[in-house]
Image (cartoon, rainbow, N blue to C red; front, side, top):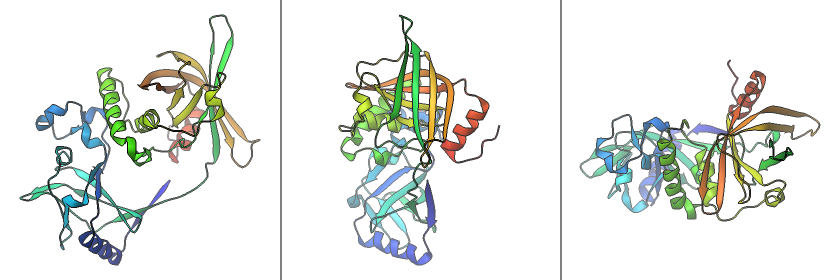
Length: 320
């Protein structure tokens, strides 16, 4: 969870002075991430994209180097010699992020065009975000079960992979900066594949966890991940699905329904547990070199369990 805090007028003036006097790089993202239907995947058609569509490149954060930025007293920021990717934000609501004395700040504005290039106006409201470091209320795990060809009951235990937080929205910044270009290219390939297969994925934010795992070079690997008895780990979970990684010797069958179990154990009292029995549908697989992860959808969920999962994932009251 994060808390949005607006700067005071005096703080805002100090920040504007800082932007004028220092070489400060900025990061530009769309204010609201589009759903899949609003993303134009063909990069060669940028001139013909309807107003409601955005190029796929504009979905990702774009860094603007300090040398391409000039800040005027009126709170107008001029972006000079920008790339085609940056120009795709023209006329759209964007979020501008930067750091002031190691404090992350952002504001929302519209990117416009002027005689000298692209320009953005710093609004009256500038915000800082403080992360609330609250411990998770429940420990989470899952189990995927099936019956083998020789009628043997098999169950794969799944635990979260270290460094990945369940039931929270992944962020691009969590991806190692050294592999962000690789991650972006892989994400584009996955999105193209998803569109070709006409799979509904909403805004696809869970894919950030997928490309983070598939491109990250080193992990703190839990012992069960290397075990033949427990070859799966979880890198994302919400109230409708999870992403499960698998070692090279373990294959899950696409479109197959598996026996499913979700386990929640109260962190402060291991005797308090909640177990949800459901089905898991293996909806997709994402690959990179020798790594793979599966998109697992939750099926046949009881209504009271839907409520529990929704409130656990969103922090909101479930309305039937």
